[in-house]
Amino acid sequence: MALLLRTFARQGVCLSRPQYSFLYRHAAPMGTTAKEEMNKFWVKNARLNRPMSPHITIYRWSVPMMMSITHRGTGVGLSGAISAFALAALVLPGNYPHYLDLIHSLSFGPVLIGLAKFGIAFPASYHTLNGVRHLYWDIGKGFRIPEVYRTGYTVIGLSVIASVALMML
Image 1 (cartoon, rainbow, N blue to C red):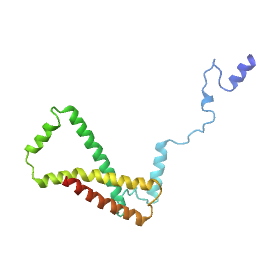
Image 2 (image 1 turned 120 degrees about the vertical axis):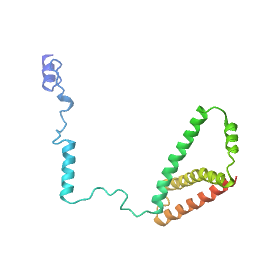
Image 3 (image 1 turned 45 degrees about the vertical axis):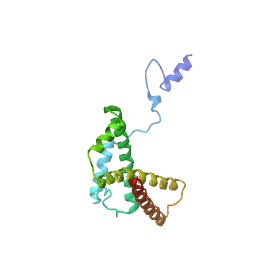
Image 4 (image 1 turned 30 degrees about the vertical axis):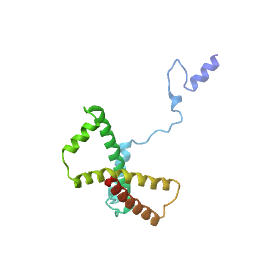
């Protein structure tokens, strides 16, 4: 028993003397802190005259870039609109026919109603069709630059056509 306790004491596991060195016995000590490392990084970049990260200002805008941004924006907008309408349906008094009659009583012209319909239909159709394009990419096809542009223009054209068709309903 004494041999066993002496063995554990040598390894730092002795219960009479709480030492936790067995937890970090194989860890390498850190030479510097994160703040010191960042300071060294910025001093080196200033000494070498390196610019700060240019973000998107150095890129030439392209159709795939704009479509990616628009896809994300329509996704956020659609989810926000659905959440807002769901919350409004739960909180506001009355029911759907009441608010539909309210909208009809405002006597909006057909042009404004058509624009509102297009404004609702375009994000939904664009996000759906661009999602199909992304599914096509997920199977590993359509990554050549001409195909990316062709499918992009196709999505934009079909989105406009689908939105106009939905607007006419």
